[in-house]
Amino acid sequence: MSRFMDKLLDTAHGVGQRHGVVTGEPAEPVHTTWADVHRKARRIAGDLIANGLGKHDAVAILAAEPAAIGPAVQAVWLAGGSVTMLHQPTPRTDIAVWAEDTVRVLSMIGSKLVLLGAPFEPLAPVLDQHGIGYRLLADLDGGAPLTEIVQVGEDAPALLQLTSGSTAEPKAVKITHGNLISNITAMVEVAKLDVENDILVSWLPMFHDMGMVGFYTVPMVVGVRLIKVTPVDFLSAPLLWAQLITKYKATVTAAPNFAYALLGRRLSGVDDDAAYDLSTLRIALNGAEPIDEKAVRSFTEAGARFGMPPECVFPAYGMAEATLAVSFAPLFTGLTLDYIDADALEAEGRAVPVDPADADRPERTVRSFARLGAPLPGIEAEIVDQQGNRLGEREVGEIRLRGTSVTPGYLTVDGPVPTQDENGWLATGDLGYTVDGEIVICGRRKDVIILAGRNIYPTDVERAATSVEGVRAGNAVAVRLDAGSRRERFAVVVESKLAGDADAEKVVRKEVGARVFEAVNARPAAVLVLPPGTLPKTPSGKLRRAAAGEQLAASIRGREEETSPPLRN
Image 1 (cartoon, rainbow, N blue to C red):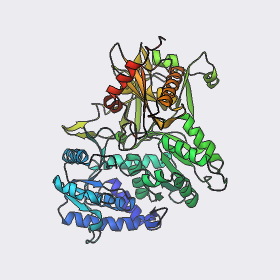
Image 2 (spheres, helix red, strand yellow; image 1 turned 30 degrees about the vertical axis):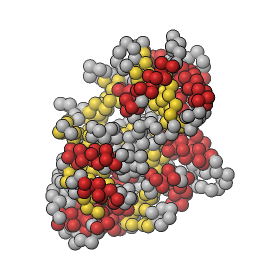
Image 3 (cartoon, rainbow, N blue to C red; image 1 turned 90 degrees about the horizontal axis):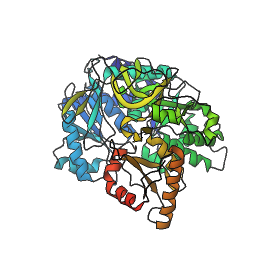
Image 4 (tube, rainbow, N blue to C red; image 1 turned 60 degrees about the vertical axis):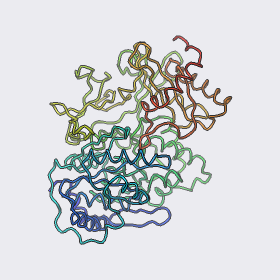
């Protein structure tokens, strides 16, 4: 039996008798011990095997409620199978297109079974129409429990994690039992997770690796207490997050950058200083998207009124290809920024340190990036140039990873694809550098805008754009135009409630252009203002720069033609 399953079973029969998960907040909270989750999982696994599920079979799950998903996931593992969380349709989803994409995904992972749960049961006729086999999760809890766990090895797949890119070309990261136990063990060690005293609160979606691995699998496997709600619960009432931290005296939580910015804004509008108690937080993990200093500051300043220590901010670097986490910043140090000379970064690929006070001097352009800590135990990281030569500290190049948490490969529509080279290195596609052994991320290689030999990072452009009044926070993208050619330039696309008001749009475009020019000394060829909900995003909510460029190409070029020729820099 794999070490991962050994640990899961030990917990179910040990501390899991006392600790568990609370679901159903805020309306009908229910506490279920990890032992009870395990007992339910055994019943589901017995039913699945009795109805033909075989060892190493791939099972897809389409559901949103953690109370239903958790036991189902464990059941598949008990039965020796692998789990794939399907991308969930939204109210704006074209169901016919979604169904076709889902058929492709199921074919790619070799799955003949979907476990269907709330609120997606109404999609059953769509699955029938496309010949997709499924079982309703609500019907799976009445069978005889599994008596013998199906034993698998360290190399057996446990998760086939769909990447957050376009579903038109689906790809799944193969995460093995060995990958999972290695990454979980490292995260628990570095975060100093205390099984008896830590309490986790999370609203992260179970189809995302941070929600599935970090904030369900980890507590289930090691026996930490968990309070789990859904993204809909959070987005419908963002202050619910603070309410749950207060109610349960939570010590650990996590979210991408935009969510902390949103919570910070909502907390700042609360009149009663005693409304919440956030003093128990020791880890507020910030990952999954670039860390914005202003968003973090607004969160910590708003949280301070409610006793939250600013040092709880916990920057992290992670990816599905490393199971979840690559590096954690040192505990209780908060956000530490590395200030560097922008000219040396953009023209020479060097991270030359400067005094943070220089950031306020108009004659010098300074960039700042979050320090994300050293690689976790079991993971090696190196920075290489385009020829694969290893670079030294503060030299910018592509980050490569190697170790026991790193996936052996992808599943694609064209078949399996290995992720590692002959020496076990994974090329991440991320550009960055190291400082005193800590990883610093500058951006994605494919997204960097190249102007006259300068590397302009889209995050710098986007942060400048979202500083303009009227632009929705976290809803701006820098789009490369004629990438790789001598005519390469960029446009900025933003969302705003002012879209449609010609005069207001003109002001927003002018302000965005000016702020971007101030930030990167380059003027966008065009600025496009769109209504909220227009920009393409991944199922986990990340903006898709390339897709935005493709889908909005005609509009961007139309706006570009209306715009005066950009000023020469």
